[in-house]
Structure formats: C-alpha cells, structure tokens
Amino acid sequence: MTKERNGSDQILKTYMWGQNYVDELIKINAGLGPITASHSPVWPFWAMQDANYNVIGIVNKTGRQVERYEYTPYGERTVYGRQDVLTNIQEETFWFNDAMLTYPQLTSARISWPHPVTLCDFGFQGKMHDTVTGQIYGVARMINAGRFSRRDPEKYIDGMNLYEHLGSNPITRVDPSGTSFLIVPTLVAPTPAQGDAGGWWVALEANVTGGPLRINNAYNLRLWESTRGIGKSACILYVKMTLQFKFKKGTRDWASEAEKRAWMNNYVSAIESAWSNQHRIILAEGDACDCKCPNGTQVKIQITPLFEGIHVSEHWALYIERIKDGGFQGSSTNTSFGSVKLDSEDLTPWWKGTDFQRGAMHEFGHMLGLSDEYNVKGGVTHWLKDTGSVMHSGDAVRPHHYTPFSEWITDKAPQPKKGEKCKYAVQDGKKNWTYENAGIHN
Ligand SMILES: [Zn+2]
Image 1 (tube, rainbow, N blue to C red):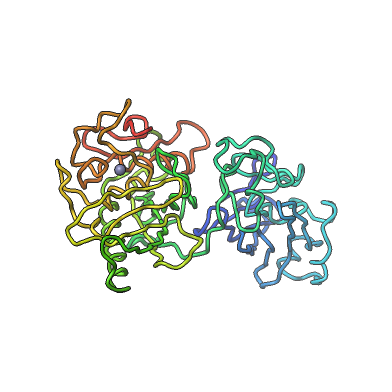
Image 2 (tube, helix red, strand yellow; image 1 turned 90 degrees about the horizontal axis):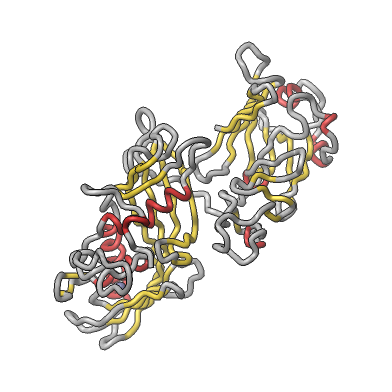
C-alpha cells in the first residue's frame, strides 16, 4: 500500500499493489478531500497496465475508463481525459463523453482540488511521475527523458553507459530498482509453497549476475514472503534456471532419445533435491519489524530443462557426452560462455581419493558462482580440509555455499526507510555465513 499525502500530511489517495511484480498497480482509492474519518466519500478506481507494467488507463466502478495515458519509449507521459470533478467521474451524475479521452490534459486548472493533473501518479512501468518536474522516480535514481539523472550506483553491471536506462530497449525491459534492467517478467500466478494461503513477491531479478565470481546471466531470483498466519512468516527464495541439454557422442553413443531424456530428468531431480532446502537464510542484522523475512528464508532450486534444439532463453547450455558405464572423465564449467561439459556418469558418485562425489553436483556449484575448495592457490585456504564439501571432493552442500543467495537478499530485498540496514546470512550451528567471512571471493 502506498499513501499520497498533502502538505498537512493528510492522506489524499491510497494505492494498492499486486503480487506478480513490485510495480504492479491494482487499485486507487481517492476522494474529494483527504481520506480521513468524517470526510467526504472515497471512491475506488482500478488501474490497467500493459505487458511492461505501464499504467495505460484508469477505470471507475462502473467499468468506464476515465483517464488514459500515453508514453514515449522512455516514459514521458501524456494524460488524457478527466476534465470533470472527481465525484462526477465516479458517479456519472454529470455529462461525460468518451471523446474526452482523446484530449490531452493541458493545465491543472481544469481539474478539481485535491487531485490536479491526474488521478494516478504512477505511470511508466508502474513508477511515480513527478508532475512538477516531469521526472520519474526510478527508485535508486530519478529518470529524466529516458536517462537517469545520475550515474548508476551499481556502476557498469549492465552496460558501459551509466546514464542509459533499460539498456536502450524499453520494449522488453523494466527496471524496478533503478540500477539494472531486467527482461519484462511474464505475468504468472505466484507459486507459494504447498499450504501457503497468501503472500507476495518482495524482490525479483532476472538474469542475475550472481555469486562471488559474478557470473553473468546465471539464474533468475524471486523472493516470496508468506503472509500466512499472524504477522510476517517465512520466505522462500526461488532460484530459477533454464538449462539447455545437448547430448553428444563420447567414447560411446547415446542409445536413443529416451535415454537422453531419462538422463536429463534424472539430472533435474538430483540437482533440485541436492541443492534445495539444505540451509536456512536468516536475518542476521536489523530489526525484525522493519526487515523482510525475519523468520528465515528457505531456498528452492527450480530447473526448467530444454531438450536439445535451438533456444535463446537459456541461462546455461549443458553438453553431455556418453561414456562407458562406470567410467570417469573430467567435467568443467565455462562461466564466461555459460556452458558446462558433463558426461553420462556425472550423476553417479565417484571416489575422488578422499570422498565420493557426483560430478554434476560439483559443476552446479560453479554455475551458482562458487569456487573450487581444493588445491587453492593464494589466500582462500580455510576450506582445504573439508573434503566432504561439494566444492572439494565430496557431495555435501555447506552453509557458506548459500551465501550468493543471502548476499542477493541483502542487496535486493526492500530496506527500512530509516535506521539499521537489514543483513542476511546463512544459519549454521557455529556462526552465520556471509560473503565476507566465508572467504570465497577469488
Ligand atoms: Zn571445480
């Protein structure tokens, strides 16, 4: 819920937001005066948004469109319609003509107090327009005529032009934080955990440059806050990866398409169960009342497999060679090209001299941005003795392997307006892990 106030701190309008996307606007409540007890009535209006979350119109309770908005590709807005007082717009007690929706609003004088210019202050991609300066609140920065008003605080993450907005591609991209664009998220029903009655997405990012190694286009992350029960409840972080599987002849050839598909399905279920729900992310610093997910976050890996063919939407391409049953050959992950080389035996534990390991589990750690923990040159030596770790020669996912996710929640989850920053870490019996103390930077 967002409230708009006047100079006397009275609430003029309230905005209700949806669950599919942070800037999904559902409803506006507005009245002739401030929305306070004993004041004049308050009327509901519903927002219409297009696929890029631009607010394109406002509808009243009778289903009549009362305002219409047009945008330039970078968000300059023209408001059409609503040349009458609010009560008539809502009640239709006054003459109203659809032709009004073809005339732009020119001055605030035509609109009755206290809602000059427009009923809806949220427009381009669901962001707030400043009707005085013409700027748009891009959350981290102001946007002015398609460019940000100051340098990208996250520097060169998504391009060399720090003032560029939406990578100069406003049609397919949105930018909920003001620091990095993402491909427009498709409107899908939220997928809460089984038994969840309600909740909402509190942070979303597609094509994350993730992990301590800063791997490009590694996965999509979505943080779901459950509102079931009294007060805030637990959160779920969905780690969504789209993987393309390409099967190649090795020292043997694949027997059939069925054999390839069976391997692919086994891979998906093995990775999802080995890497999901192993440890809990907790709120390590910050007030439980002001921060998100104070009761902890579970991590859920969700893989979308694409079988062979040509695809453009994948995060990773996996090349799987058929080798002899019970055999072994080395596997590798190329984080620059987003490609992984595996073989048909990588779902079978192999004795690595100190522990058993499934090669696919280890390579998946690299796909999350994690480094090897054996034979490490330089400063990162304190994992060398942990041979059971999946990033060493074993198969176990350790708490510090979830720090790419706790770090992302610290960066992306909404922070309190004032006061102590919310910091998230991975829970362990001995200490809580973050990037800093895990020492997994390279
Ligand atoms: Zn490795």
